[in-house]
Image 1 (cartoon, rainbow, N blue to C red):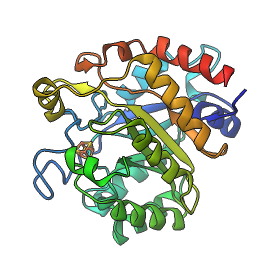
Image 2: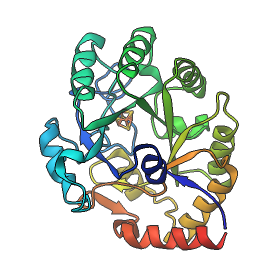
Image 3: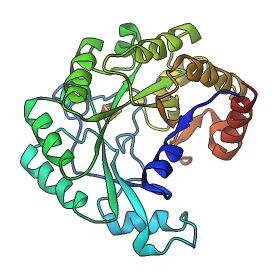
Length: 294
Ligand code: SF4
């Protein structure tokens, strides 16, 4: 059987208990949406900036996930990751962001700060801020690479080149920050081999890749991608095709890479395609079966 390390297993080993994510917002926007780079954003990005469940209120976020904890874990012993997911959470005044993130990290129930952002929102002042924060507790930075192919990056209006990603990745890793890279399978115009190229590239990164989120492309309502899909439909994976491709990705990655996600995580209300991905339990079961047989 293929051995993979999921983030839940990793967290349980490290913290001895379940650790859940709180989806939070920092008030940052995104340079790919506010006009600094473009107004359109990445074509797949929803109005919520790819964080449709997020809130700015940490106690409200806790209430949302508390039902997931086993009853045996008393409320005052529950541990959480503060996950700032929507938009670009290092795009803003570093002093304001330091205040916000450090106040979150000083809360005893928060064990990790995780910030979703873009590689072009990592500069010296941001790295300095992240280093200061990581002296309090571990900090993860999630970079949305999605693909190594420049033609696809242009087509989805990603707004930066692979070179920009590489530089940000190295700077962050050399500063001791954990980097988790997002990849999307199913981007328009990409063959399976092109998608695997992205995973091959990540598997050879130096310093080594610590974590990956493998995501299924979601076509969401009111996005540029939805328009593109309606005008000129592109290939949408079946559940079986997608899961078999995920297995190929997992086989390429070094066994130490922590797998943070293997499916999409979009809002069901906004989901246009693939409709099967709304049944997340079914997808995860199918994937786990394949992993067990591989
Ligand atoms: S970088 Fe993130 S928030 Fe910005 S447009 Fe792309 S997906 Fe949306």
